[in-house]
Length: 169
Image 1 (cartoon, rainbow, N blue to C red):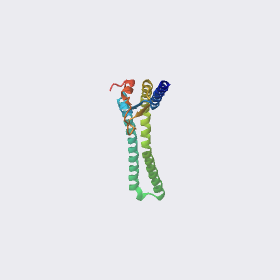
Image 2 (image 1 turned 180 degrees about the horizontal axis):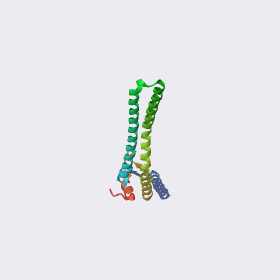
Image 3 (image 1 turned 45 degrees about the vertical axis):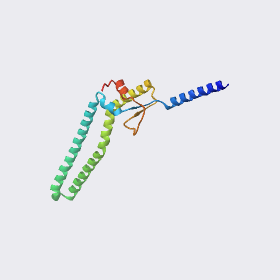
Image 4 (image 1 turned 90 degrees about the vertical axis):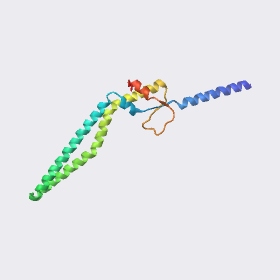
């Protein structure tokens, strides 16, 4: 009887340990920024983003130059203008200045949207490779080290994801 109870206790202990190991899962971490920088074609992303930013800067500079030219002309001719012409020109200057300010406030959003649009295909490929590595290697969780504040344990799956994407660096 004691042997049976001992055997049952051992089996229960093994089962509990097995369940705990399964519930803990397998953890991994990846540095998606490192992978993104190593991906072929990512250089074109930076070039396209720089061209877009330059285009916006040139447009802004053109608006500022137009405003300055109109303001200088207004200042030179202000003494000879009738009050109705002065009011119209002042309104034009105020409207142009408002458009410049609106443009400035929207530029950062435009740049962020363009960056997202250009990076999305690369990020989708990385995510798909991470998903495949997780499934193939039995990971319950894979965390990105760019957002983690601390990690101690787990497997660095960055090399596996790079291999999945065909990156040799």
